[in-house]
Length: 245
Image 1 (cartoon, rainbow, N blue to C red):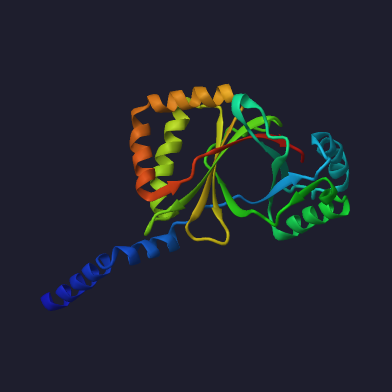
Image 2 (cartoon, rainbow, N blue to C red; image 1 turned 135 degrees about the horizontal axis):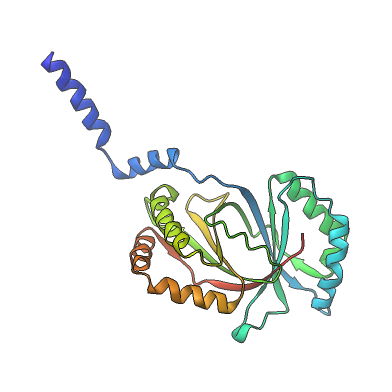
């Protein structure tokens, strides 16, 4: 009987030990983000001779032509890069389309093609295809807002499964202040180590107030340290976002 119990004990130990990398791979199989939608973005540049007025005239045509399915969560945004002193880049922009499935994306691209959007702007193929998870619940729906985007990569042996506790600690700290910011985590569909972090603010002043507040918290240093241990991010990019649909 004692030998039998010893064998069971050794089996349990062997299951708990082993290569940490393999343990992380197993962890990724069980702890995954509960994504709420898909997001596809395109990098665009205005055709020579076209201006933002051309884009503004196009928008009502798109709204009238794109038949949004009842109950769907489809959304289209134009994101213009922010330059110094809050000015926007008027020659380039991003199209960001939130959708639930590939059928929605096909209808979106077909609408652009039918309305000859390529005569206004040259857009590359899908720049990013992400699955999106909302980390906050402010639901900032204003059309004219400021968006900050960070493109990041997990370091070796790290993933959402290892970052999840840090994200929960971060969102718990935000709940105490109820700051006017929406934050989204997104993973690239075609990559296992790429993710995107998006902050949405009502204005540049609102962003500054949030950053100053966050830096004043003791927990912010701990969270930043844990993020740096698990990932590396490129410098953030700022945009002025306008909602179309």
